[in-house]
Image (cartoon, rainbow, N blue to C red; front, side):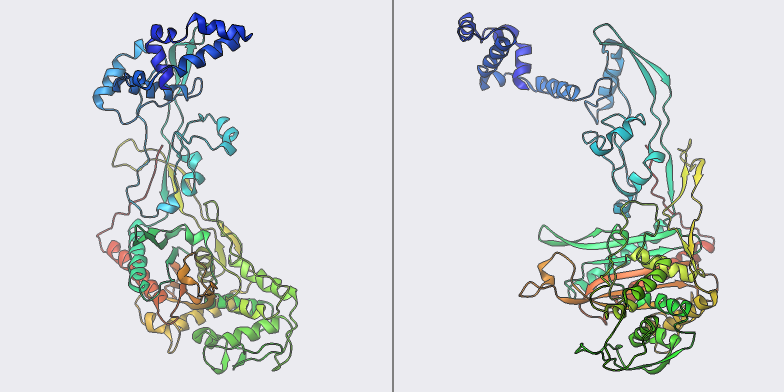
Length: 591
């Protein structure tokens, strides 16, 4: 407070502000003791003028600012009073520390992100010294030798791995006099820097994936004003390691369009994923012996009592088996599979009598692939998607069977496809590969403290032959004539397989552009894609692409992104194998 500081600098002038006569008037009001001292102090402060305060020099105000910061601290807890000091300032103060009890100089840290905005939302953030420890976790950190004003990881990787990243503090003992003033400080133990994290993310690949997302969002946005985001997840299906985890989002700032990092959305936002989940529908049908491999159904519009609109595929395919159903993305085949699971033989114009138990049964099998449950990724605040109701309209089971009811995250979609790719093992997605000590030399990467081993969350309750049968269907989607992914992926040297998806939905964003004149949400599509490569050997990469809220379901943006990211993966692989390894930057951090 400027008035307090002015009074300290001008004790005689401050004392003269209150006269004996003023004190007598207070006593006449029977004000004595501490109350009198308080009244006198208040009157003295009131009589300090702005003109007198303007006498404080720039140097005085700097001293006041430092004193205010010192007063804001906690007893025996270091309090930073000035940052970004010059070398000269550091030297001058350090030379006089013997005459400045309780004052010290130290080298502090600031988090740097060498890859700029790449993967920023996933990396998370750290608190400032002003924020200090979060109130709701104060006791947790204090018992672990944190100070109240320490900086800690606030979100995602920074928060999840705070214990590994936080260094060990130097232990000191303060020697005080009887009045509690610090006489000297003695060092008890040396401090130690925090560890580094080695991520599983291939940063060279991550950059190319993010470039693909941004390029395609810009190219399509003028024709697709509701489409404001897109996501990609790439992972190793053998061990669950995340190779790329990317999301981009269009925002309007300062009257212009900007594209921001939204990698976080791969695990915190969920959408109807459409036909990409049809592999799970077939596998549920096989395992419940509702259908068998090569079971045939006739694909034509289906009519039910109480519904004016038929349930149908995007075209009539006639007599088809399960592999053909995947290849051309037949909805009717999946409807029949769901009806069989409910114990119903389709008869035109009959009512649907589907019990809740059938929903539960199908969800049981979907969840084994990670659809509708936590993926287990080593990051906090993961979404599991949204589960639709099962007690109102029986026809919703048919929507569920084609991926147009429950919602899932792009990460869940990648885990589902990865589980099929590796033969039925649901792997825990991992974004941290190793914890390493701080290196002693710049060219080193530090000693391994802990390796993060692959974790099998579960083996799906399905016969391996059934899984291989669905994999053949996924191969046909990308490689055989009239497969829904053939136009983009047929004949590519890295031999991809997978499934396309188109989900009818309504706009789920916040912009008015996604609402009609009655402020109802407009109808649109989620375009998705999931797959793996190569299909004729142990697949080494599985992926998902999710592009929500598209007007034109034939735009092909999902396939365009999918091909670009797979091209990038295998081009980098070939370049590195050819004797010209590409250095992969790992966004390590230390404290």
